[in-house]
Every structure is written in structure tokens, then in C-alpha cells.
Length: 325
Image (tube, rainbow, N blue to C red; front, side):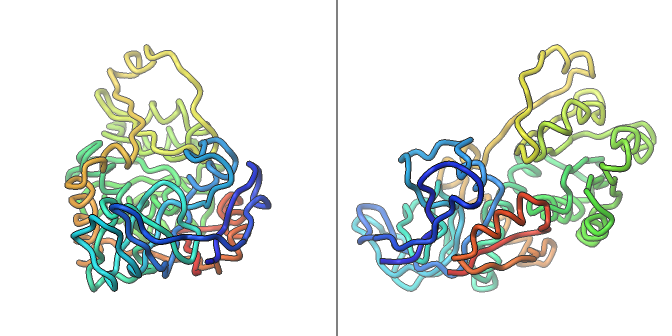
């Protein structure tokens, strides 16, 4: 039996239950991982609240990313051995001291990437990679708008986009978050509670607007985000921390300049193992070179997952959050 954080009914942070669970031996194509750190992401709150249904139903163990060492290998696994350091992003089961992981979704960690770094960056960092390099290929000199620039994905996106030579504009909720975003490669910050972000984007870009908007906020930033795009620009919605974007008339994209809009996910971009490894290795490369630093700002004991969710949803966190089993 090992410690885990489970959900027996949908609800607020109070439904996160710290309890003992049976893990069992790894089956065909599986590895058993003793976790050193578990990542906490906004998507975890969607599963907890029931906005995203858990594939196996209730109860379920929360969490989508983690890092640790392999303690057992199931039949049919050829690429891994006991003692290997690995990280992963898979559907649910992360908030636990030990767990089973499909070997094909695990990635060996380079020696220069710590367990805590890995748990803090696999989902957010690989999300940043596909957003910047695949969904829309950011290049030198481009204007890009990043909502929630001081958030977990935001800080990685800002650094990486800066490294690529883009002019990075970010919206933030406070002066403290503005300073943090600027320290992580954001060239211009907009206090969205006090300023009209569309007007500020026009001012910052001299009326040229942006090639791409990256939006993990959702309801409160749409459709104003479309007014920040130049003709043929790309609106990338990758999250909805303020609520889902309501259905809209697709003609609005034509009216605002033949715009593109997409709602991508990491699961689709990394569905093939070769793509998963390419995305992860690109991330490991920029982190290993120091071009992107992974700020692990908040660490909680596994048993304190409720507080981690309260702080995340209360916007009291910046950067990455991890749980330590």
C-alpha cells in the first residue's frame, strides 16, 4: 500500500482525499515508478471538479505528470530497467508515492535534469514546446501575446519565446507578477485588471498587432484577444482558467482579418512516441543550456494537495507547483 490523493466525488479542493492505495506489479508494457515529485497543473482542478470526466470513473487518483525512479519492469518492456530515472505525462494517477506508467509514455531523464525540475516542467514545458514550435512556429522579430504570463506555462513560454527572438507581450494580474514575468523574458507587461490589453497591445506594437496570441485563460479574454491579432494571425486557446469560451459565430474570424483559431492539446501532438521524444528532447535541450529555467516556486507535501489546489485556484501561485510524496 502507498499514499495517494484520490477523488471520490467531484467538488472543491476539500474532496481531495489522502489515503492508502494498492499499486500492484507492472503488467504488460508497464513500469512501476517510485515518485520523487508530482506536478500540479490547472487541468488537475478540471478533473477534480468533474469538468473533465476521469476515463475509469470514480474514485480516481489525481495528477498528470511526475518524475521518479523505476522500481519494477513489466513483461514486454525493453527500453527501461530498474533504477532508471524517468519522467512522464499520462492521464491521471500522479498524486501518489508510487504508480504504474505505460512504458511507451515514459521518458528517460538526462543527468542534468532533477526530479523536481522534471515534475515541474513535463506537462507545462512540453506544452510550451508544441505551442511555440509546432502549433505556430515563432520566429525572430514576431510580436506575440501571452495571457497569464506569470503562470506555470506562461513563465516557460516567455523565456522560450524570448530565446527565439520574439517580442514578448504578457498580461498579468499584479505588479509583482509583472516583475516576475519581466525577469523571465517578457518584454512588455500589461496589468489586465487596470489596463485595456487590446489598446496596450496596439500601443506596444505601433499598431502592427501580433502574429499569435497564446491564451490559457479562456472566457474573460475572449473575444478581445482576436483584436490583438494582425490579419492572418493565429489565436491559440490552450486552457480555460477563467471558464470555457462560449460557442461563437465563426464569421468573426473573417471579419477580424481571416484569422486562424485552434484548441490544441499535448496528447494529440505527442500521440506518436517519436513525437513525444522529439518534444521532450527539445525541452531538455533548452533547459539544459540554461535558455529556459524552470522556477519551482511552490512545494507541498503530498498530503497537502488540498492547499496546493486552493492556492492555485486563488491565483496565489506563480511558476510551477510540485507535490513531494
